[in-house]
Every structure is written in structure tokens, then in C-alpha cells.
Length: 235
Image 1 (tube, one colour):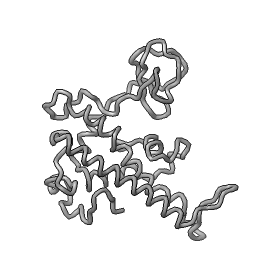
Image 2: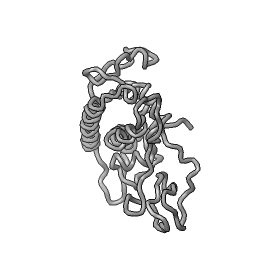
Image 3: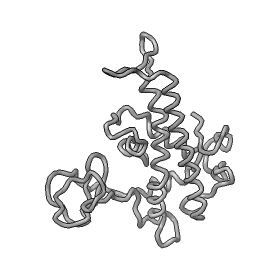
Image 4: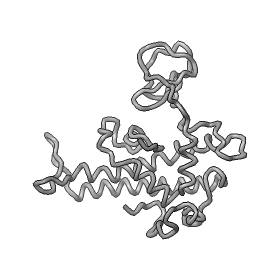
């Protein structure tokens, strides 16, 4: 399986589709993620963030038991760190017993000379903006596809017992609302990135928030980015 930054569980939670939304229904995260980095954030940043992800491959799946301080477990697709010894609770939310394990290794330097390295900065970027932004983009693609389906008997709308199926106007309104949120998050994210003034970890961007020297970042050159508007992905 090809590696992505965003997981299916993160996508449903951070897009506010709801924890009960079937993760298998999500549109492909890999393609969405690559499109956004290719057109908006740059291949270099994607590569560095993928390399900086923390390695929790030795973490065991949570099961009832007693956990020590600092022990890492995986529960429902998310990694958690025990905040105290003698912990017997299940990690479902951040509280006095558990905290979310960092997405990126805080000690990963990623070719940076900064003492904190890029990993700590990537955790901040991810939690503040990027996870939410990517999740909204996945949700935008997913909702119309699951609401309206093409079958051998034509195009049909989904229905549920006791509910009136949404029509195309309602679906369009919902999708537009998601896109509006995505634009807001994207603009805030780019303003935050520029304030960090850290080209080694985050890259350099022009006044339109496009990666500088895009011909070095994109296999197809700068023409691959047209058309372009800040924060609005052209799908």
C-alpha cells in the first residue's frame, strides 16, 4: 500500500463527516493528497513530511490491561500515549490518562539545522491546518459520489428509510459549504507557513501561495499548475 499522510479515520473525524461514516466510502486519499501537494504545497514538502512521520510499528493494539507512563498503543486506527502509570482506561479521547501520539517525530531534523528539527514544526502544521484541509478536500469529493450513483439502470439518488433523499441543489449547497471551509483553512495555513519563515522545513512560496521554482518540484513543469486560484482545488 502506498503511504499517505492522512488516514481514513483522520479524514472522517477532521472533516466532521462523523466517526460512524463508513471509511471505505471515502474517495481515494492518495490522489487527493498528491494533487494538493503538486499544485499547492510542493512535492518537496510532501516528501519531507512523509519521511518525518513517527514510527509506531511496534505499538500493540489496545486491549484491556494496565499501561505504564509513556506506553504507546493503537486504538481504532489512532496511536495514543499513556500519561500515567497504572492506566487501565481505553484511549478514546485526550484526557488525564491519554494523549494523542505525535504524527511526526519531533526529533527528525530532515536536513534542518534548527535544534527542534522539522518534525515539531510539522506536528504544529498538521494539527492546526493541514489535516483539516486535506480532510475537507476528501469529503468534498466523497459526498456527491455516495449521494448520486450511476447504475446499469441509470443514475439514481441514495435513500434511507424514513428520510427524504437530498436533491442535487442540497448536495451542491453542502459541497460548497465544505469548499468554503477549505478555502478559509488554506488561507490561514499559508499565512502561518509564511510567518514561520523556515524554507528548509516548509519551502518557499510566492505571493499567490505557489511553490517557488515549481519547475524543479513538478515533473510536468509549471504548466501543470494551471488553472490556479488560492485555496480552490480544480477537480
